[in-house]
Image 1: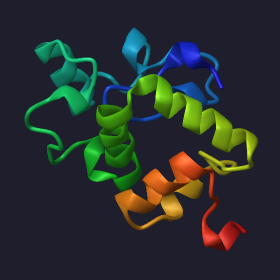
Image 2 (image 1 turned 120 degrees about the horizontal axis):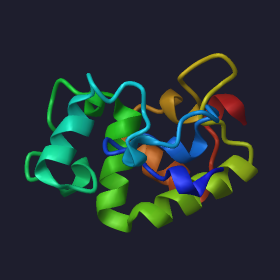
Image 3 (image 1 turned 45 degrees about the horizontal axis):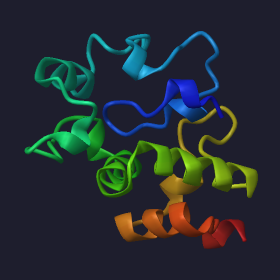
Length: 130
């Protein structure tokens, strides 16, 4: 985990991204920032992340994805450092953020925000992985 990369404006875990050339969304280094609604909106509004916005969660953005929206909501309730602590603990426990060659992982196998929060807080792997 690279905590320096932090959490993206939308809630993506840049800290778990394997791209060594990307310093993370919050550093302005994401190659997708020109088309990313969340990046542009947060920068324009001076927000640390979508979780600070009165319109959260907006539609037609990265927040349409359950994992990302849930991570952003988790940050609003517990803070970025707590999310990174949970992600790091879960990574050490074998929870996979991105499966090899894919943009999805164990968190994406869950169906509700509550299930994602439970996995974050308790380091439970999806039942299909246990």
